[in-house]
Length: 377
Image 1 (tube, rainbow, N blue to C red):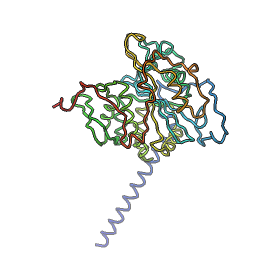
Image 2: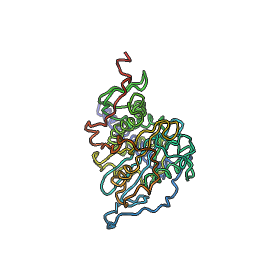
Image 3: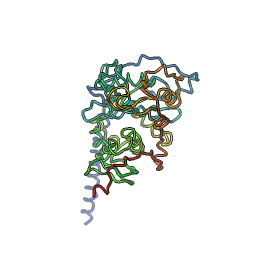
Image 4: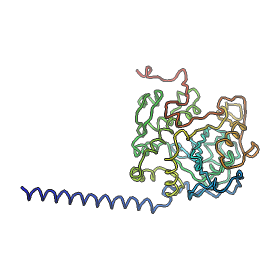
């Protein structure tokens, strides 16, 4: 009996040692693969950002005040800006456009939501409709490819240097969310994306498909795409909390999925530094703002619906929230195309992730003829 027990103990120890050895070499291989790939998300279509030759005047400050201690490839010490793009199914139109400015010294993140229908005109796109979401595929401005044309357009419009970019097609959201283990979220209202694609209100974990439905849904919103932008803040807040909760092992595990579906020029060391910084930022210090403006209707400038920027309100917002270390801008310094200015409805529209996490979600009114669960029964 003793011999059998000793044999079992020896066998169990041997199995444990073999398992640990396998885990060690697998983990080492994963880490080596990741580390050896300096810029793993670069694609042939996107590539590197071209150098920004503009001059950015800085506010007078002591060097130690601006020094952020991070070895990032950035244009302005103390701040790092990432252009985030959500592409359509074909990867041609940028239907989600976000400019995330990391204030590294103040531990703040300000996100500028740029409506995809912003009118930019023929100076930036060959498309007859003239919207900003066409610049990536049909840009008439300087830039060797779609990403660089978008960067030129957004930099000219908002006067913010862009340090890097990240993009994903809407159809690639599901596998990325699935790899993350879903997004815990409190959905404030029922969403009927299609008859057989329903997200019920309440606390839940959205899977990949549901996440795509949530960020793309707009049909029943009274304000259409503008309401969708507000609703997306709820998802962004939940997604950031999820990312903050992810550990190093989980990130390593989902790395192959990210590499397959995401395009970016970020280096791995930059991703690590930005991720560590994001971990230190309280949710209430992450604020999302929408570009001030109002809707365009057929006849305002062409025969299409669109969105007109409100020039002075936009400049005021940029100076207050997105240029922490730069001198103030004036409207004449930017290439903002204000077609009309008859309303103030969308001005000063912002939310912070702390409030959203605590249940203070952006108001998103539905149309009177919106689909309801009663209609489905």
